[in-house]
Length: 296
Image (cartoon, rainbow, N blue to C red; front, side, top):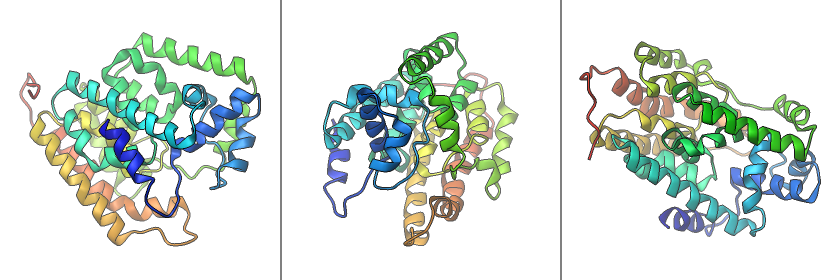
């Protein structure tokens, strides 16, 4: 309920804006009507950006496409927030603190996938959703591989192929114009590969893989890092630090008119690295007991 309320309130404020979920909603409606989502999204979505997602994302968005856009955003936020909360209750440790973080709030308002994808790491029945955003999904699969996730992803891809057989070609064409980069290619991003020193831990493998997959390197994409804190206090510390990153990037790296998304996230990267990625890495590498006690 709180997730839905926050999303609803965020879009009451002027000026009118959009979320990443908007293109999923547009693509799902196009798919339902028999149109080409890769042609419709850049024509209808006012940003003009191509549809960078595989068609599996539009298939996941089909249940929301019958709603008006405003309500679809709110329901998407409610579903994502609820599933992450359920996952946090099961995982314990520092994951519940993710719900208090700027990373989660940013993902919620922007209609991002990271809360849902992170929940799927803890709730195996949801693992098929990783195929909707295979970059982040692949990183989570590295940490939490399962036959169920693979079968579910293949089934989702098969449904998408049945609905629109040429989508893989259209998707690859769209990706050629993408501005996504891997965190390891950002300044000092190679430090994140130190997570491999703890490669036996699933959360360490997630961090290393997440640092290597193309993305926007935004704050909202750091939600999976909340799998790393070993107790609630570490979770609270990482959540608090995320707000420092959020404040500093708004204060010192605002988006200027005409600035590309890659340029925006490139100038914000030092704050996200220093106050989210590196604290999570320090928590991961800090000496730990053989048995990890889950936070109550």
